[in-house]
Length: 136
Length: 160
Image (tube, rainbow over the protein chains, first blue to last red):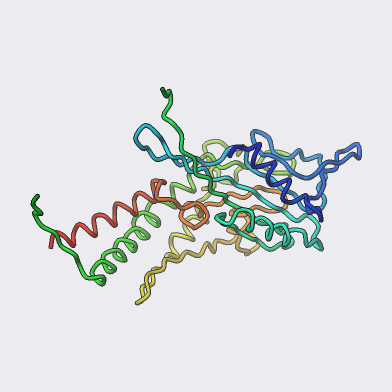
């Protein structure tokens, strides 16, 4: 799995009816679904967020283990759901869909308070077998 | 074909050896080394929607302006609170190591959760992930340390 596949999978999962994904609202008033891949840059501060935000790290943590001519790589992807509106319930449904789609993921739910929004962080393991580089 | 020798130990002996290795791992590898290495890692991504850079309060900081990525050591108060709280409990069903990160801020409130999971304005830096079920793996150095301790403990059974 790569980040494009992860993003597509999660968008499809959480935008299926009823859509659970909130919106980013740009300064000019237009909006897009609140899904962001965090790489060298994080979500621009001038974007307003409503509803449920989904962010994911561009690169997973890689844990390789050498084999004979191959390397097995455990990739650990991180996906974070944040409920920006305190009265919203989308995060509960989103967690339910996520654990059923990624049953081997571990998750950390943090309730909201005055300082932090309600959020849930998923670590999704993804094992791949790769040939050694450069290969035959 | 010749079998030079083979021994099989009672389950209780093996369980005691593994528990001893686990306790040693939590005390020496986790509490003795791992926490400090995690807090001093300088690759924690830090994003903040507050305007302006963070200026470290610690006058001894080598670089006063904290950017991203950065470490989470600061004065070491949060790290020390966890290390000092270490408690190991053994029972007939196994062993449990516990840490309580109870350092408080200027307002007297505990803040470990906000460092770990983030706030409305700051990204989380989950410093316990690599030994919790979130990311623990025997492929990590800390996981390999546990495996090594278990191998040694089982090897000692064979030697006696």
